[in-house]
Image (tube, rainbow, N blue to C red; front, side, top):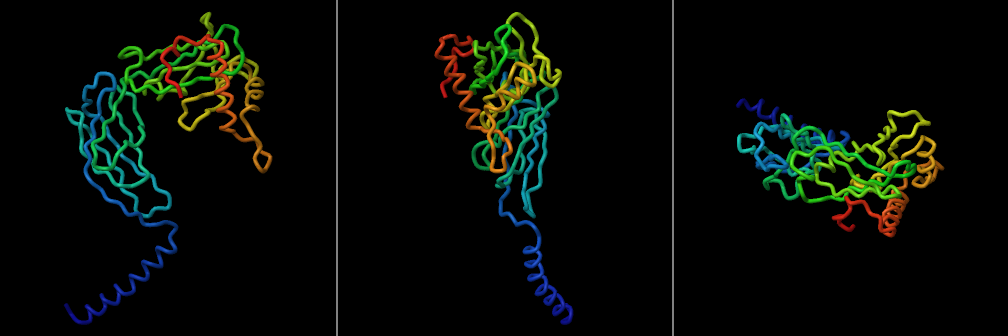
Length: 283
């Protein structure tokens, strides 16, 4: 190498180091430290345990103000339902698992350290339908309680239509497999005499409908509805809203949880508990 070229390269490197440092100070972000390694992912049929061939496994990373997040990866399972992908030891990540004829899932990140095998399960289509059956003529709040179950099969393999009875005060306990819990917000309602109750989004303000109010927990397992008009919905909302420092009305999780618990306890005290609560797990 020519001596002048060596001197020039040395000077450029000397200038580049502080310039890089200055850029990192100015840029709105930081550099993350992480490692990547292979992990085996298995995708199974949730009800038969059979491996799913051709399932698309995607791993994506979410980053806030990070200059060097890991790149997302996508791969397809083989005949044994398995595929090996690269996974990084990076905090913000989310998975997407999809296969032809199956309900696409966005599961929570698997437990354990990167590098440990991961197993995901998909349910065959169609999406489940959940019907809440309430006393004929009932108008008022409905408390839908999805009680998590470790069983992957709901009622019978392949079942996708489910009916759950309400107590007289609108409390509806549901022993829920992952199939049901993934469709909690698809709930509809009807009276015991078979009369269908419209959904709030499909009804006018003055019509009787099942109207979504909110959730009592961060997991979305305890849901509040109202069967009634828009005015009934607003009246019930006043019980689960609070004023903030600026006087605005905001959702109050503590109040919502209290109202929900009172409805559950009232149902248990009367001794008239829906049949679908017979195996309910206490919590």
